[in-house]
Length: 283
Length: 283
Image (cartoon, rainbow over all chains, first blue to last red; front, side, top):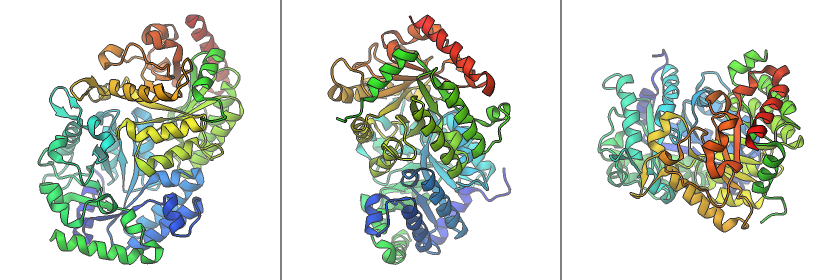
C-alpha cells in the first residue's frame, strides 16, 4: 500500500531487537517535582527529551501520554512536537497515546494530525477510542496503512470502572471487547499480507482476564498489543507469557512510573535493567 | 461548590435568552477553501475568529471542534486558544468538542487543560468519551462543578457505525447508552440543587430513536443535552420538540456546515435567520 515499511513489520523488528519494553513518557506533576522540573511546558519538554535520551539505544518503543502535554495548551504541544521529533530521530518507534475518537471529517483531522508524514505531531502510531464504532475508524486504518503508520484500538482495559461496559453484550452474542477485536481483525485479514503482522493493533491491559472479557484465545492475523499494566500497575516481566498466551510474542509492555521514578540520572540504568528482565524471562 | 455560577444555570440562561442554536466552529479543509482561507493554523484562526464575531450577540453557545485545530499541531492549538478567548470575551458559552477520555492522572491532565480557570485552553465545558467507564470520569465531573464548568458525556450518537455498540446490553439489563445516562444522572442527583439544572450533560444525536437506544423517557435531574444532527445532518428546528419530548427544553442544537456554508459574509445573517427559526418553532 505504501513504499514505507508496514508498521506491523516495524513493531516486529523492534520487539525482536529490543524486547517488549515500551517506555511511557508521562510527565505528570508529581514526577516533574521529583525530577526538579517546573510544572510547565518547559518542564514537560525537558522531561520528555531526557526520557528519549535514556530510552534511545535501549528500548525499541516509547509512548508519550498526550494529556500531560495538552495540560499546558499550545506551548505543551510545541514541547510534545520536540519530543516526538527527537524520539523518531533516535530511531525509536513512537506511539502517541491520544485515545482520540470521532467520526467522518472530524476523525479524519485527528488522523492527519498524528499520522501524516511531515506533520508537526507526526508519530508512528496513535491510540484511538471506539465508542463511536470501529467502522467509524476504518478510514483512519486505511490512512495509517497507506503511510506505514499504525493504530491501537482500545479493546479491554484493566480499570474496574470499565469492566461492565467492555463486557456488555452486542447483538446477544459477544462482549464489546470481543466485537472490537473481531471487527478490527476482519479489517486486518483483508489488508495484511499472509504471514506478516497487521498494523492495526489493540490496547489490552496486562491484567485483563481474556476469558472473562470474552476475548478470543487467538487474535488472527497477529496484531501488536499495547499492554499497559506492567510495572507500577502490577504485572511483572516474567508473567507476560502466561498473561497473553499465544498472543505474547506481539505484546508491547508499557511501563512508565516504575521506570520514571528512578529520576533523570537513574533512568537509563532502570531501562537497561528492565529490558534485561523481559529478555531473560521472554526467552 | 464554587463561587462561579453553575454551568447548568449558565446553559439555562443562554437557552432562555438566545434559544437552542449552538454554532459549531468546524474549519475543515473544504470550508477553508470555500472561505478563501489557507489550510493552515493561520487559516483556522481566521475562520474561528470570524465565526465568533458572527455568533456574538446572536447565538448563545459555540462549539469549536478541536480536531480541526489539532490538525495543525501546536500552531493550531495556539489558534484555538485565540478563538476560545475571543468567544468567552464575547459572552458566548464555549463547549470544546474534544471527546477526550482516559483514566486517573491522565484524565485529570485533560480535565485541567480544558477546565482550569485561566488555563490557555480554558473552555466552559468539554465533551468526553465514556469507553473507560463513567466512573473513570467522576473526578472530571467534580472538578467541573468546583469551577463552574460543564461536561458532556457521549451517550447515544446517530452514526450507524455506533449503533450496535451503544445498544449493547450491560449486566443483562439495559443498553450502554441507558447505563451511561443512569450513572451520570446518579451523580447529578446528589450534586445538583433541586429545581436547578445539572452541569454534567449528555451528547445525544438529534436523530437517535430514544426508545430504540434504551434511553429513559425522562432524564432527571434535568441536564443539558448537546445534540448534533441539526442542519446539514438532517433534523430541522421545527422537529426539536418532537424528537426530544420532555427533554426538549434542555437541548443545545448544534449546527455547523448548514451555517458555515453561508461563507464569512453571509454567516451572521444565516445565524440570525436560524435563531429565529428555532424560536418561532420552539415557542
